[in-house]
Length: 85
Image 1 (cartoon, rainbow, N blue to C red):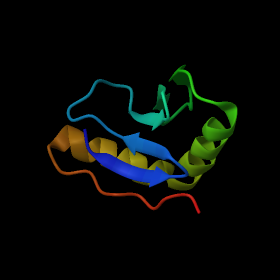
Image 2: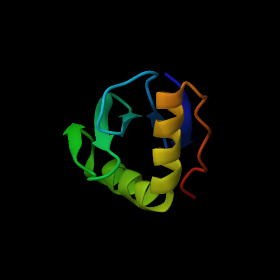
Image 3: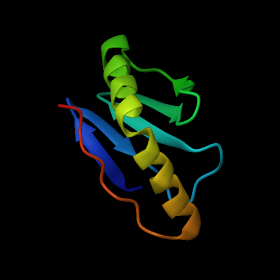
Image 4: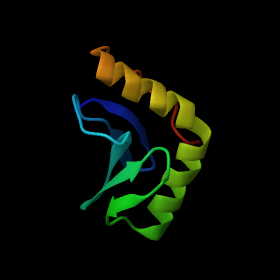
């Protein structure tokens, strides 16, 4: 599972291959969740402050996340995405 970004203790990954809809996995301490790239729907639990940071990051990098998802579907490597600063 390639790590595509890490910031403020939050680790963002995508599984290869994975099921639709396009999504990414987030880990923060003992918490784990999955976020749908298009809708922002979350499965799992995440502290509110960490989730707020992830949504800010998602808003900035949605197109890059979708490109990475299409790369996975095509068998190409995922690219790192700039962390939230």
